[in-house]
Image 1 (cartoon, rainbow, N blue to C red):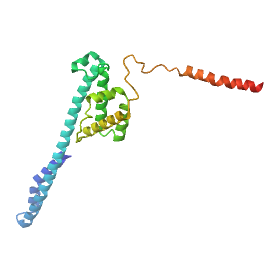
Image 2 (cartoon, one colour; image 1 turned 180 degrees about the vertical axis):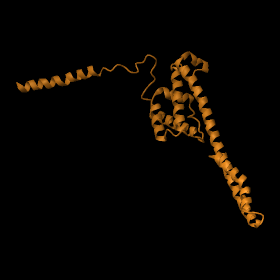
Image 3 (spheres, rainbow, N blue to C red; image 1 turned 90 degrees about the horizontal axis):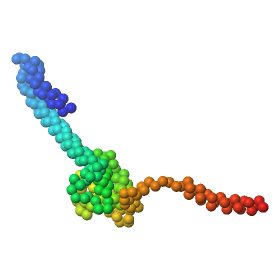
Image 4 (cartoon, rainbow, N blue to C red; image 1 turned 60 degrees about the horizontal axis):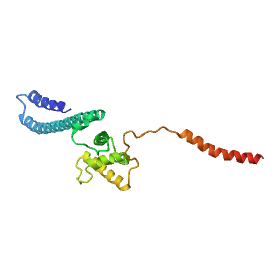
Length: 227
């Protein structure tokens, strides 16, 4: 749009003298043409300024989009490296000192970091509202591993006035973390390796035993009534 506007402005500025030359011959009064030219000059300057403003705004938007895409590309490469460490635990030591306590698998902390970054990106793009974020974070911090992760790597103990959307989301994370800590211990404690995360359901056998306890006395009462 800005290209067409600039092209139209240059075209009008180029052909307008030829148009005025055809409209006013040598026998005409050029004072009127001078007045028209002066009026046209002011309008042309205004149009040129408007075109320059549109072009500047377009360049600013394009630069912002380019900068965002560049940052996202860097984040994506970092996430790929983190995922590689999750898939290959021996690579975790290449990131430096341990990011988790000795008894907690480092990959769990890496995964918590990916979750926070994913929500932050959704928040920045407007795909996550404040109520939704608070709901997700409340469930997130109801588990011991995310609490340990944010206790070590979050900035919940610092107060910073949020100036960007990402900073505002971090403020939400800190608020929900402190609220969860204030409520009490998480409902899901740390589950060490080998812990049966999804134990086999034995509900049918339990329901059968309960059914026997309920049905048998009823049958006895029925049998006594018939007697």
